[in-house]
Length: 249
Figure 1 (cartoon, helix red, strand yellow):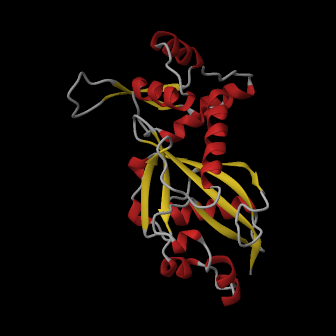
Figure 2: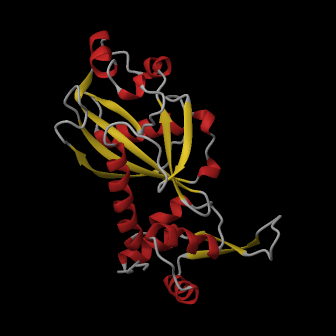
């Protein structure tokens, strides 16, 4: 059985090297019904989806969302929803907040708990989604028409991501496993929405001692190949216990 009045909405962010993206999808009723839990009744399906704007208007796009089963914890369900949405299990997931405006869903009362997930689009094959037929990455500054209050959930998710990126190394979840310092700086300029002084940025990062020199360089690039680095999570966890102040501005 699922809860009619409680749902989870997931904002999936990705970084393509130059801009921050959000993954959206359009609802296909046939695919949707194939992925609903067996416990859901025909009456619930009718009540929750017959008047869903995404079912009635093919121009609308949606976050990945679903009503919560009565026997699942929110965080575990959100992780499972992301897994079914993009085919990846180990993703960084963070709760945003609850969205409870009385008329956020015009035809029924639904309180949703928003989450955001961070992935690198290069590692994701859109064809692996089990719950959507049409998926597309959109720039966070150029969103298409959206259902319900999904634009507000994205905005709030972006606010929280930007705040957390200043004080925690969450941005590394958006980068390839091996990256250049320029890619790293570009990511944080996008996340913080500001230009960073290259010399000061690299000096600050170097002092944190959080990057591993892979002794490798870029391949098949038109310009001079840059060195590749990896994030040292083990050292970060150790330094954090010792009082490391991770702050990027």
